[in-house]
Amino acid sequence: MRFFKIIAVILVLVVGAYAASMYFFVDENKDFKIEKEIDYPLDKVFSQFNNLQHFTRWNNFFTSSPSIDIDYYTPYEGQGSAISYVDPKNDTDGEMFIRYENPAKSLRYQLFEDRNENPTVVDVQFKAVSPDKTKITWYVHTPKLSVLRRVENFWTEDRFAENINKSMVNLKNVLGNKVEKDNQMASIKYDSLMVENEENKLLLGINVSASNKKEALYKNIVMNYSKVYNYVTMDLGKKDDEFGFPVLITDADNYKDKEVSYFLGIPLSKKIGVPDNNFSFRTVNPSQNYVMYYKGNYEGRIRAVQQLIQKAKKDEMRFGDIRQTFIERPIEGQEVNLKLSLSVYK
Image (cartoon, rainbow, N blue to C red; front, side, top):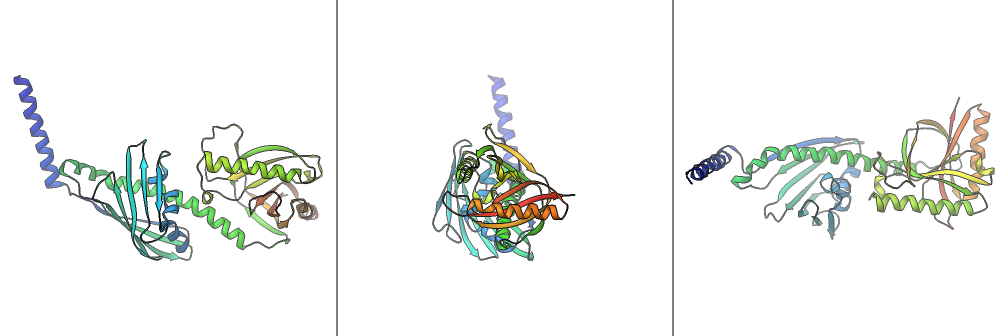
């Protein structure tokens, strides 16, 4: 009995010493600032922050858990918008609000976690460093913690900074795909032959062999595009602004063959685990391309392909695959909007 009394006294002293040290030497809340720059225009960056449907697609706080469930409340954008979330796997829930918006300049968020009546308040300021670069500054004010929980303040700033670092990587991928799509749409000149240098791409898709009979090939492409798109969006949980335009890769002159073999894939930013063996990754290496944009029925693309091949032969260039990038998703019975790229080399 005496032994247990001694242990109890020691525990009381330890807890008392801990509580006293937390009370006198550790602040009840934390205030800190984090600054980052991102190589995208202010308007495109700000729209990813003031729309919570966009925000939750790249912010690591929400993307890091596959079990999180989010509900969105109107208005979905700007001051007054809100979400609630539940993550049963990690046993957490909360609510987030945009309390203030100064368009293209600043936002104020409030985050209530796990039924805590005191919110984390985050003021975010945006500044255009140049036409293509934006500075983002977070001012974070954490809620007051009880004496026994104040030890959490030792790692709050590091945890928040780590979340921002991961979120910025996700944001760059999202904006990269959006800007690439916008730039491609703005630069289209149909039926004009151009020369472009293309960077490497990582595609997730499927290998296919199909009949080259009239309309049969395009129907097959539409069907397999739906397979790839549904797998990427539904099974892998990717959003439309997280990946680029679908790309079909095939031999440049196989339009004359009775059967066509092709790879149809969607560009992703990095490799991920793919449990379905029907789908695989394919890397497209950097190359110089002869390019033409074409709009019309799918069979009509052949003339544009022939022009690209003739240009390569005239310039005494060897050529490889032809890449068909669908600027608009392929839909049965509708015209296609294609970027045709023939890789060439000496």
